Amino acid sequence: MLSEALAALAAAGGTALVEAMTSDAWASAKQGFARLLGRGKPERQEAAVQRLERSRQELAGRSGAELERARVEQEAAWRSRLSDLLEDDPAVEAELRMLVATYGTSATASGQRSIAIGGDNNGIASTGDHATNVQMRATASDSSRINQAGRDQIIHE
Image (tube, rainbow, N blue to C red; front, top):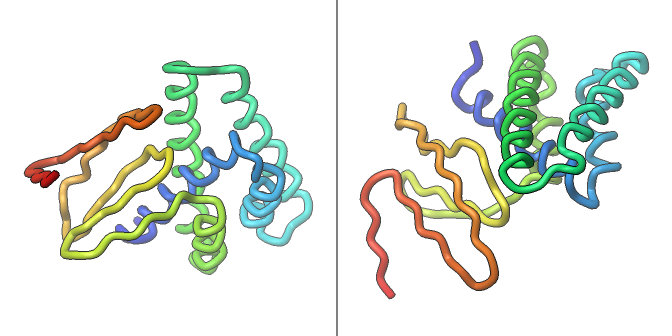
């Protein structure tokens, strides 16, 4: 069983990978994740490339709620694969962290149990300490702003 930190890394990896599937960074992300999944074996790497492309095709031509459902399904599938990979070979952690840093959305926050999320995101956020994981989805367009809270929220404007 994976630690919370490695489970969170697998989730972040799945999200970063699926985000990359619909971005201009796909070619390099595909090669990076295929190297990770192939673990130095050309036949495994080629099989990973094929699997990654099939996964990307699941997103192609979809929009709206249909695209969102496909993204959630693909993220869950890749989170599971990456969890298995981390469990089988903990030495891949550093490479997966690098891929997440390169292709994932980043944001910073400070303060006890703080989380900051920027860009177009979905996934699970956890503050640790056996906190309850809360999943929220929202879409903003134009100049709109979204404030979400799993519990108390104070906004000063």
